[in-house]
Structures are given as C-alpha cells and as structure tokens.
Length: 383
Picture: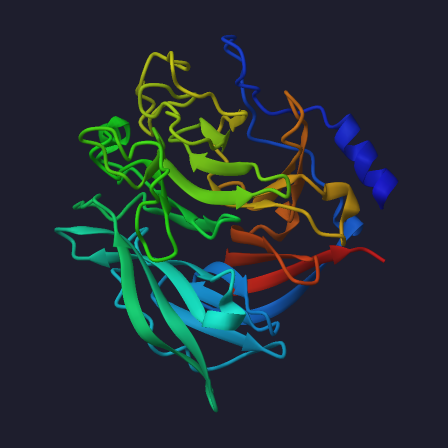
C-alpha cells in the first residue's frame, strides 16, 4: 500500500490554493480519491444521533458526543443503551448543541472530563466550557461535580458559528475555538469580544498570565488569536505546531498555522464570497494579517481536523486529515508542501463526515451522518 499511496499523491493533478503570495491563485474543491481498496472500513458503532465528537479513555472505552446533548459510552465494542448521566444543560438549535469531549491529560489521576457546548436561549446564547468527574457505575458511567469553567463573551441571537473545538497543549493549558456567530463577523476583529477567536485557558478556565493580550488595555485576556470565522477543527502536531481549519462562506475554507497574538484576517480578508455571491471584502490579503497555508474554493465545509502521528498508516505521519461536510469525505494533506497535493478518503460512502480522530490503536475513526443512520467507522490498512 505504501508505494501505491505515494504514487497517488505524486500524480494527483488537483491541488490546494497556495495562499502564500499576492497572486490570485485559485483553490480547488475536488481531489482524486485514494482507492477504497487501499484501506479497510469497518462500522464500529451504529444507532447514533448526529455524533459530533469521539474521544477515548485510558481503559479503551470510547466516548461520543451527540449534538442533541447526550454523551454516549462504547465499552468492549458495544454502545451502551443509556446515555451518561450528569451532562450539563445544552442549548440545541440549528448548529448549537453539545460539541467536544476530552479527558484531562492527567485523567487517570483526577478523572476530569471537559465538555464544550452552546448554552442559553434563542435571545441570548453563547459557548461554554465545563468539566466534571467521570465516575464508573454498575450500569455504565455518570458525571459528577460539574463546574462551568468558562463562558465566552460572545452572546448572540443566532444559533450558528460556535467553533467549539479544543485541544490541550503540553503545559496543560487548552486552546478553544470560538466562532463569529455568523451575524457578528466584524467582532472577530475586536479584542473586547470573544467572537471569532481562539482562546487559551488554564485547565480551570482562567487566562494564563503569558497570553498575548493580557496587558493590552480593553482586550479580553483569554484571546490567543483573532480574525477567525467558524473554526471547527484544531489539532496539535507531533512537532508542536497548532493547526486549525475554518469554514469560509462560499469558498475560502482555510487551514491555518496558529500562533499567539496573530490576526487571521476575517472578515477584512477572505478567499471566498458570501453565500449570495456578494463580495465580503475586496481583499484576499491585508497587511499585518496571516494568510492560510492553503484554502479551498469551492468550499468543502471543513469539520474536525487531525494531525496524524500513528504507526498504522506510516505514509500519513505528519499529514493533516480534515473532514469535508459538503463534499462528504475526509481530505488528506501534507502541510509541509507550499502547494501541496491532496487526496480524498471515504467519498464512495456518500455520507457527511463530522469528526476524524486517531484511536489508541493508531487507526483512524470518523463519525458520519447518513440517510441510513449515523455511525462510527474505523479505517485500517488494507491487508
């Protein structure tokens, strides 16, 4: 499989837009598929309702969030019928709901699970981060000692563009994506708002003292980077690079390298146009803003993002995998190439792919939303 896959990437003729110069380079929404014979696909879990995120506990149990507000447990390969009790109250509408779940880096010692979710009402809602202790019971598990750690200053009357992804860093702080609320796009440029930001928090929900805007008058201290739209994927690579993907509107989906204090341009700079076809901005680049390392036009609607460092697929180590909700696939890309070629996985299944993650076994797991039911699939190397 190794030689076949390398050859496929070398021969792929459809490339990313490489947004690294001032040239108006077109992006692309299509990619040649990795042959389905190059990897095996196995259905692991069925009977789910809009599975949004997958995580693992140290004992191998799988946790799955359903956007409607339930947290599910898979033990010994079986989905337990009863959801995990103790999940916080979640605002569910349109894109709002329960988003990500992650165990604390020292979960084996402290038992903390972290959850991101929408909270509030139609008239005022926002993004929250909470944690609770995970307690095993005879019937499964439950959450206890729930505490809200952080509530974003991004209150809205919409039910869109929450971001809601987070990742722990080696120092046990975490980065949390907070979207622009759709109707509040210009607040993405304002440092007194959490709209359109990536936030860095301690594991107790506070702003670390070394955040870039802690000493900036009028700025919210939690802000790590700004000028984002709706970033539903964030990933930490093995070399410590932080990547995030971001929904454009009609085109202009991005993958960015995230660095402290940087402005990523939205909505003053964009490689896309609005859904109506109207121009969002005349500028693809603006001084003192960071360009994406690549972008997609037309849109693939990127969801979760994984920086793969497992052993099961050695050719993919260091590559990024991004789900494409609109194009119903997983995109595989080498972030090191200035105009990298890309390949497509799972397009033959014709289902929306929401999450992509690596399991403890090094295999790749995805959550899907299909007309025949929502599932968790496992990708492993073909024999």
